[in-house]
Length: 197
Image 1 (cartoon, one colour):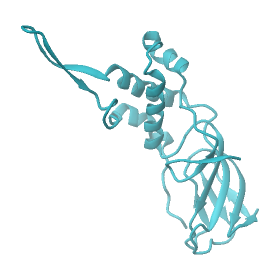
Image 2 (cartoon, one colour):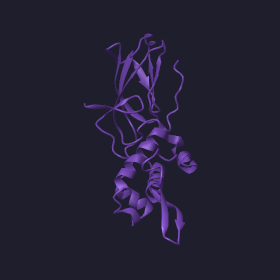
Image 3 (cartoon, one colour):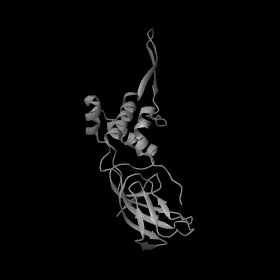
Image 4 (tube, helix red, strand yellow):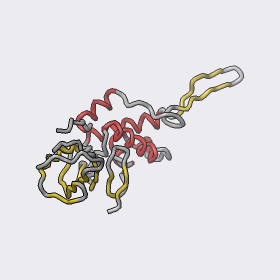
């Protein structure tokens, strides 16, 4: 497998595709922006914003790998809230089969991890097969804001014809903050970090 690091502290096998396609965006928001040359980059940027807010990749389902430090605890909390399988667990470089796991991302070992850095490596499969509809709607909403508000007139003079344009934060500055309705849609998909025990 060719693992690629993510910003969320774990690696994925391959590269992450956007959370929605251009066709899915058009199915949700209509065909008005179907030929807009900014659509693909806006979808990629919106997907990154949504994933960053959630703290993991969310979709699609794919093989992942994380290496964690040990603090004498038996539980490893994976950076996900939807896993479909644990492929392997290695403690101190030695594979073990003496563990249990839950679909929300907890792996419980039969013995405490040693108090070492990079004490254990877990390979697992995480993510929804495809983005759930409410998440797709949130991504489409962010995309629409990025495209529709990308440039706007901030002042205009009729006599002598003078216009001023402001470049939105989506193009040339920091990404715009997600609005409350988008953040609310993400709540079920956010990673909640539990304390190790």
